Length: 259
Image 1 (cartoon, rainbow, N blue to C red):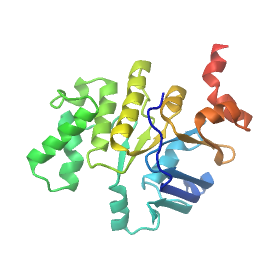
Image 2 (cartoon, rainbow, N blue to C red; image 1 turned 30 degrees about the vertical axis):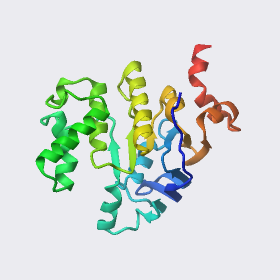
Image 3 (spheres, rainbow, N blue to C red; image 1 turned 90 degrees about the vertical axis):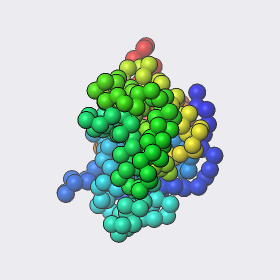
Image 4 (cartoon, rainbow, N blue to C red; image 1 turned 60 degrees about the vertical axis):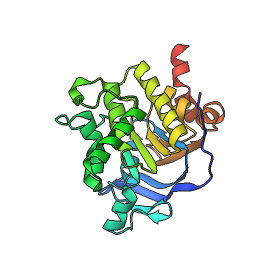
């Protein structure tokens, strides 16, 4: 059960008439949605609908074909390179694999954004890295290499690194990918507890229904055929009452398997 929902109507990310793609290939057309401060916002859809493509645009890695992505009112697409970097510094990203450097210890991995983007003394950097590791229950593993810890622990270490610079928005790309059900459930509870403790806004790409119903305040559902959003709202409400029959089947697919 979710412990807390967004307590603000303030818009942190606003997407206006966004079109994405690669050269002449269109992935999305005229997407419109918003992410509110402090909420857990989930991007859903079937295979090939462009969930990860949309995420890459939201974090500034890919430029849009058309439209706007506003972060606290600042247009990410039209910003100068310096302005764009300033906006992106407010992001933390957890990639599918955790994306840890194998030759660096867990603490060194978490400290990397601090050593790269700040001039803090080494002892302060080390202290801050350990605080972030304690937030994800990895205290005692500071000197371990990524190859010496489990997949679930790698995800948590990657999350600690994503939080190193105290981002305003955390982005997750399939955080439960490759995890067993127990580790996946533990990660869901960690996501909820971090939101409870820090109030950070979270945007998550996932297809795991258990995670969706556990953590999400609101979702958008992308559709490959229409290249757009076919429904959005509270996932529990959409599961039970969506006017789109495909959406209802999609969100009820686990129960259908058990019949």
